Image 1 (spheres, rainbow, N blue to C red):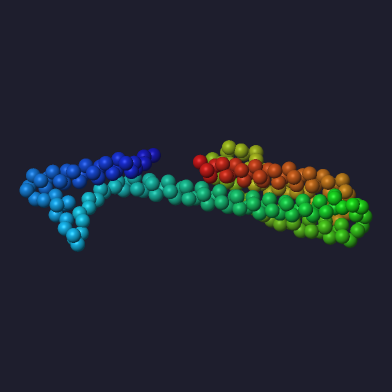
Image 2: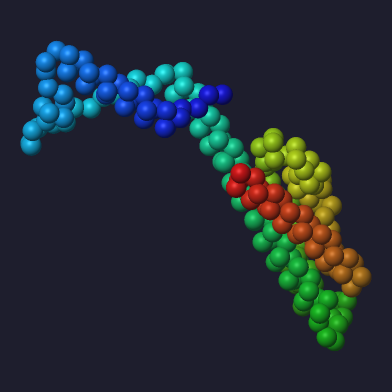
Length: 195
């Protein structure tokens, strides 16, 4: 892939202007600077650019825009998932950290678990699009975990309204691991977008 070098283009433009000055001097005419008088337009020299180079540059720009769009979509979905996981952890911590512990048939405990279950449904419906191929291939195992629906539901365990405190603690631990994976994915996207 070739790129247009702005310094070389400026040097080429200067050479064209110098050549124009020499030709004008050889004919006895004044140079553009000498012909310029206050209130008149100045003379400029346009250097035609190669259309193939411009087309390639436009193509590369379009590809980069598509990659950026994919990265933003993936990051946005991961950010949403991170937020939902945080809310789920808050709900489960209400049960784990409550003292004295809730009774198993407590209405407040059941409401907390219902809230957890509704947040889990949002995560199940949330689709995390895979990042662009170069990013995906760098950490395939991570992206498979974050973008595959089966892996998503496995990391956010379903809790019934009669879940034991041990099941709640286990789910909380699993959510922590899932949240760490989401953070790793967002960090990988941030590193790549800085390149």
